[in-house]
Length: 120
Length: 110
Image (cartoon, rainbow over all chains, first blue to last red; front, side):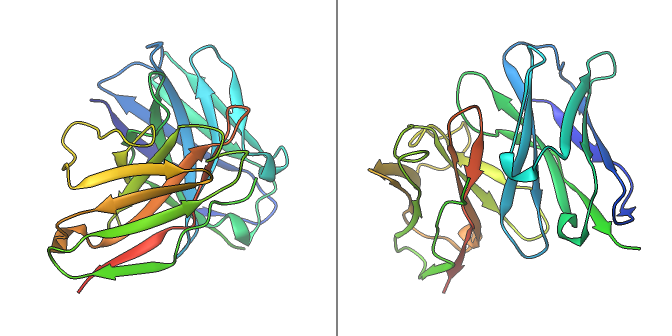
């Protein structure tokens, strides 16, 4: 069972780019049985899927984010990264990374989450 | 992509059974047998409770079960325990390698 740990700045200014990293320990991003997703939760609100990185290097995103999100992976470091451009206060949230096995459709292992506040 | 619809809150007494609904559309819940359910305690990360509609991961109590009818999925918790008090979220595959979550349901054990 891998462990996932999100990291990044806790404060981002409006209109700037939010960048977060998910480090996977006790596991490999290149294991072809898994995908890696990002999900966020705004204060007091529900979960929102942001996107998923596939072993084949394909990536799929939530269309509601209008092309502001990019997910990439550095397999040598065991890391999956999230970039969200042109942030506003609405992007203030706790951001989670999570594992998605290829053999079933769900997020089975989650990081503890990292909180990002967008404010000047 | 619209969020799946869940009741804001449900409640039950210890030992009772409760059901949480999750309503989507023919584009998500109604078209795929890929609904998952997550339990989230305050300040914690979500935990997978049900996947592929009605399957339990190893270690999840058999008091938790899932089902689906048309565009609505359901999570049933039987033999309610105090530790079940948490927020519950459904999630469905929505086509095109995308996923959509429900708005969440707060379960109160009376």
